[in-house]
Length: 622
Image (cartoon, rainbow, N blue to C red; front, side, top):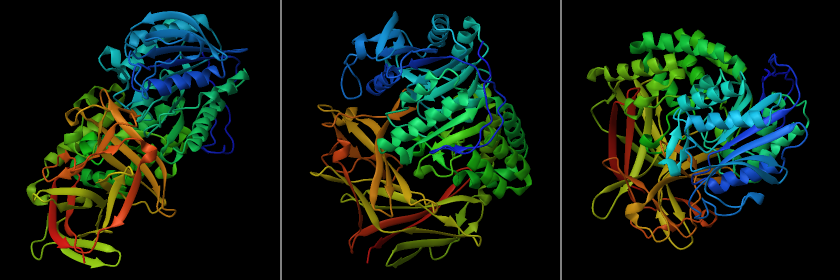
């Protein structure tokens, strides 16, 4: 039986943030690590590298390592791989192995199975425990991730994904078949899985969880960190911190660290967080009509993960600790309930790393789309969401009930005030009706045919006197491959605490020989140090299956086309031949618009429900 492990945590480890806490677990000896590698996907090449890292440790002494590796039928590089995996050769379909030092010992050829089927996961857990019984057990699942929608996809099974209910069934059935009560550790080497919903689902099944709030880079975890288990007395928290630190060190070496997050959670502390979340959600639900405007303002200033300039493609996941903190300030009469969430979350997240682009992240996110139209009805089926799901229903319902007279509206009169100075352009206008939750400046240019393309947006402010204002520094954002240059969309939110800003650029990708009609929508995430004037990290990401995200590796001979926003809200590509997708060959330009440029600018204000009003103007850059 797996024991509940823990120790008194003291001090801080390099690269992570730690909360001293008595976790109440006891030491024991010997570990079995189970890797469930769902590599029948466009992450195959990267996931096979992870298996190689784990084999660099290999089973030895009282450390036993088992793996299920499902490979894709495609061998089209660079995302897929037809290469041999150590001494196991090349294959398609799923196989299970005993992972030995730099070697794989075949246990069973499962053939073409659906690794998103909970029964396949359950059978793997049961077989691994039977073949390699131990004192302590860790299970790691690797593939694309999406938070509450789950993990996947298995391409040979029609892009099948395993949702949280499937994960709960697969793990619990596997543990029951193996005669175990719990895992010591469950880990998700996947994007976006450090959510309240995931943690609440895993809490009955494991003592600890490791996952990322944000998108993970393609290299994923550094599985060499599991070498700490060659000491059989290693406890679960030492293992967890080693994995987090190993990930951080590898991300540093790969120049992806500024955009990364990873946290270790003590799931034995989740009941207190559940209680606090239920209490907060309850009062927010009961008083949705009067509290939702304040909650909407709090949400608008909270760190978001998996965000996209196109809100329909954003994940809707926001940092839970930041959200609770902002609610505590924006709605003082529920500060006690919000503060209770903050305290309980601090007991759950015991160790974390977050890159400079995500300073202030608290280690766990929660689903909270900005507007009702972006809410996924399937979220209501997430059992662990419970009271939070009921709150979201009440919140969006309150938004739909806002009378027209209470919706944001500018005062009639002189229209949008526009003022140029040496730094850029400032726009402002007074509101006639309050209730604004957010403001943005959008800007763009008319095309030769008279159509308008929006090229970017920046965060605005709503003053206490009701005046809305925004600033645009008159910078145009371009991307070049050294041969051709295209205008690109630039969306900015200010963060006074960090010199870094992250730009998410919507793109279309066309594989070599492909057509524009068959383009794949991807995003380019760039982190820029504005003080040093240099790019600190960059990566492509793409969706796979049901909103599942992961780093995307294009063919360098493929083409990417930037996307700008049309007047009707659609995303279209400006004229141009496209750019070669080879990421190291791309360069970015932030150049001031030349004098005489005809510019469209608008000031947009929205309330918590997404009711929006705008003033615009067409001006000429002096």
